[in-house]
Amino acid sequence: MFDWIQFFLIGPGALFSAYAALQCFTAYRLKGVWRLVALVPVPFVAYVAVSTVEAYRAESNLWPIGLMAVSSAAATYLAALLVGGYLLARRRAGAGPKPD
Image (cartoon, rainbow, N blue to C red; front, side):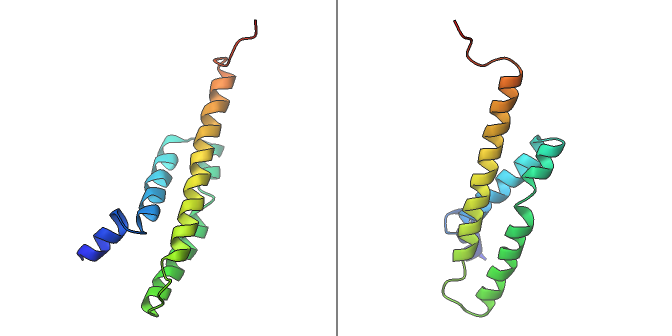
């Protein structure tokens, strides 16, 4: 049991944990179309998670590689989406730099 906790908190699974936390945050924070766009990586990550479990059961020595790669890509996508949405909202609010 402790091995799994260690895997998801400080091991290679920490990327997946960070992605899952960021996915929950974006699903809670964003609204409307932005929320739907934020949910785009979920089916891909779910597919890779199932493949990872199958590779672990088959005793493959590279079983976490796919999960690490997809989780980091999905987390980067979500972070870019959050930053882009923030910048767009700020621009619409007129808080951008003012020309002299």
